[in-house]
Amino acid sequence: MKLHRMAVAFFLTLAVAVGLSFSSRTALSGQGWQIDTGVNLGAPKIKLAVPDFPPKSVDQQLVSLTQEFNQVLWNDLQNVGIFEMESKSNYPLRVPEEPLDVDFNAWSTPPASAQMLVFGKAENINSNLVITGRVFDLGNQANPGVLAKRYVATMNEVSTRESAHRFADEIIMTLGGGLKGINETRIAYVSKRSGHAEIWVMDYDGFNQHPITSYGSMSTTPRWSPDNTKLAFTSYVLGKSIGNPEIYLFSFETNRRIPFPSYKGLNATPAWSPDGKKIAFCSSLGGDPEIYVSDVNGFNLQRLTFSPGVDISPAWNPKTGNELAFVSDRSGSPQVYIMSADGTNLRRMTTAAQGGDASAPSWSPNGLFMAFHWRVSETGTYDIYIMEIATGRIIQLTHDAGRNEHPTWSPDGRHLAFESTRSGTRQVWTMLANGLEPQQLTKDGENWNANWSN
Image (cartoon, rainbow, N blue to C red):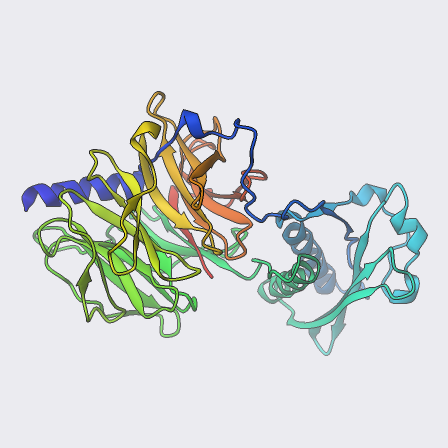
């Protein structure tokens, strides 16, 4: 039993806090094919012009909040990866506020050369920030209106940013094939900026970073419930003689912990089922660290794996709920496996021929792809990869930029969050699902093991 405790502690330290990985020289992207992850589904990017919304008075608070709205809206639309943002330096001098103000020729021909125009205005009405926003199809002068929205916000930064996020999501869903944007989502992660590894949460763009736990111990592996009202995570409880990790649940509705059983041995790496009714996790209840599943209250416990060694880090197929990926060292090194939700139909996804160590599996929202990290055997480099599950094809997303680990999908399937040391310390980053447009979200202390809300 002591050996298993040491093995899981070592596995958690690597797979959760530092990171295991995997890679393959024979399965890299230089094979003449690409995996279509759905960033823009092969369609050309829409050329979008987004002039700043003008404030309708010189009131300094309105001016400042309008500037905030304009910047957030621009960033949201730029980050989604389906638009070509036309440079503001090429815009006509006259910025429209109303439909009759739009000069179609000036905006659709060089130098602006836009296909779609986003415009509007900001007003202070009854001490509220009122944003009127529109989207015009510049190629359809007879009926150009694509979207018209009005948002009433409190005159503060948080409410202003929320309005910009909501409008950006409406634009993305309207022009992006009905797929909702991610601008109102959040990312949970682990931060050591306070001196201990605690669970933190931030907006998708890194704004509003704040702690959820303050246990003064190591807390890690945060995982959102499907309805985003709870987090499950692993924490080491101070004062326990054996120092075992336990599973905790936190409710955002009550801002309190929710009871979950403390099973014998080690209990770690929880994962919610897509319907929110079950939790899969690693436990050494039976001696070996294995994958178990239970109701969210810990009842109706069922053991799914039966193999010597360590089985850890389960991840549900979010599309079907019928499969679980997990990490096991039963072959001698950590590799990614998939099984049915009842433990049957087990198969290994990463092969011995590929070498290295595979860990941190994360399913895409459509259930077609698996993101993970992989340590190349020859160089020891940690990078992010995507596997097309049906074919086993693999593409490398990060290259020559420090250690890159623990990917997690955005709910739109167009982005990944991950941890990277490319800036010198371990921080949370995002990128498009094709590996482009990396963005650093955290800077203070060390931050890792992100999980994107739904």
